[in-house]
Image 1 (cartoon, helix red, strand yellow):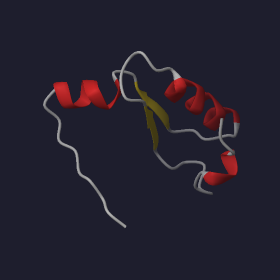
Image 2 (image 1 turned 45 degrees about the vertical axis):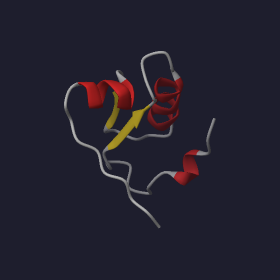
Image 3 (image 1 turned 90 degrees about the vertical axis):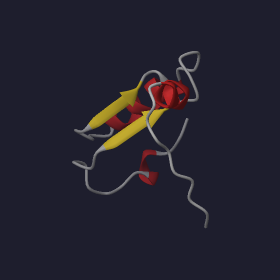
Image 4 (image 1 turned 90 degrees about the horizontal axis):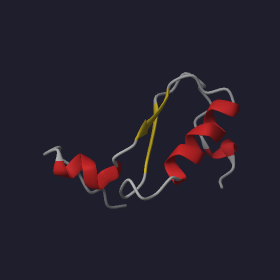
Length: 64
């Protein structure tokens, strides 16, 4: 659960939700909250970050 007020104010912003792998469904639940809040460009990366990496896609780590 999260507060949709944490999302960007522009409802047309691209939002991609993902979990660690296919065993987790939190990304789907999070996407539903965003859609219910009026966001129009909501996607779920169903295979999760694990599937992304297994497909040979790159990742970046950001440090504050």
